Amino acid sequence: MTGRTRRSTIGPTPAGGNSKQANGSKQSSAGEKTPSHPSHSNGKVKKEKQVHEPVRTPQERSKICERLSCHVLQESLLSSASGYSNYRGILNWCVVMLVSASLYGILVDPVQVVSLFLKDPYSWPAPCLVIVSNVFIMAALYTERRLSVGTISETTGTFLYLVNLTTLLCFPSATVLTLTSMTPAGGVFALGVYTILFMKLYSYKDVNMWCREIRHTKARPSVAQSNGSAVHSHVSYPGNLTHRDIYYFVFAPTLCYELNFPRSPRIRKSFLLRRLFEMVRCTNLDVILFQWIVPTIQNSMKPFQDMDFSRMMERMLKLAVPNHLIWLIFFYWFFHSSMNFVAELMQFGDREFYRDWWNSETVTYFWSNWNIPVHKWCLRHFYKPIMRRGVNKWVAQTAVFLVSAFFHEYLVSVPLKMFRLWAFMGMMSQIPLAWFVGRFLRGNHGNAAVWISLIIGQPVAVLMYVHDYYVIHYMSQS
Image 1 (cartoon, one colour):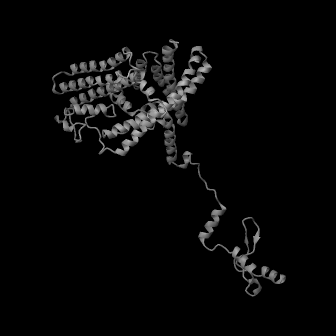
Image 2: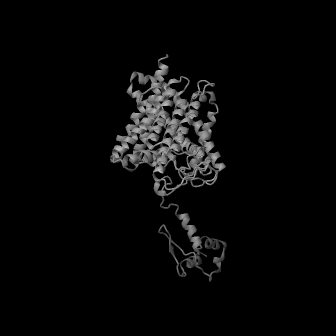
Image 3: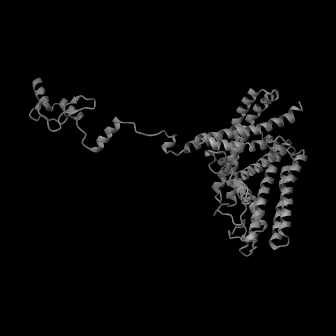
């Protein structure tokens, strides 16, 4: 029995007999047969034939190859070279975290939130001040109507606009400074509305003046042709000088006036509800973060008084992160949720309220892309007119930063009723910072420098005002 088995093992084999294994050892062909020996038909030999039977089809060969190899050349998903872009799960995580955090906001006393805007529930100075702004809107409209028919000259119209726009800035600031019932938050709200209205009416003046200069079409003063009408017809000057048209522009999410704005075909109710939900949640989360930083602000007073610079830096860095989170949430609340909500409600078609400022590699790119309505206004009504007068480009850019610094200081110092120029100096410091980053830093280093300026620079200026306000109003009373 042993001899017969040995002879069948070393006997002749069919073509493709012995094959070498991957490890280098030899293996007898699984396909050899010895039909002359019936003893090989026992169960053991049959079992060996089944185990070592060769792969006959390409599908079976590919399955075995898959078992042998489990690695391929590929990048990690978070690497830029991977080409992966589906981060829906992370966005859902943000939503879950936002909702979870907002549940804590239910415990926040709403009276404390309202008290930020109102000291006396029977006195509403900020809303009343906003209502008075209609006087300046009507003054601009009726000035334009007189100019359109030639009742007053261009020189007289320019003088009337100068008085109207100057009063538009001085009147609310004087009111905020004199009224003791005006809270800082209410003052910021009222002055913010007046600042936006100032820029809108300035654009309204310029565009109508340009229309008078060209006047290539006849007037069609039909109310149904205005921007705010349901019939989106073409409007030509002076048919735009209507109450409906100017109030559509006042409430529209833009600072640059046009006779014919791009309009969306319909109002999407689901889109409105999503934006409204985001507005409520972001407001709630900002209130929670504000409560988080208040104890830290209170604990930072003593290092400022003792001029302990190491402790001051430690407190500022500790406050920079929550301040930056508040700023980021405010950006999303205002520029995405709120402005899209208003635009959808008014069927305003141009929804470019911001660009990819988070990818900014230079400071100038950030300031040109994080607030598109203001950037368009500065470019259209300030920067280009100065350039057309032959002013140097660098001087024109510096002038834009000066105007921006003025309004930043205006919106902070007047409501707080103290003048420290931290916001003004913070904005002007962007000029040398922009030069340094643009000249010496590129790519990711430049982007990191922009983020550092946002995380450290702007919150520090805000904290300086908070500290000074706390010292003036609370430390002096103790």
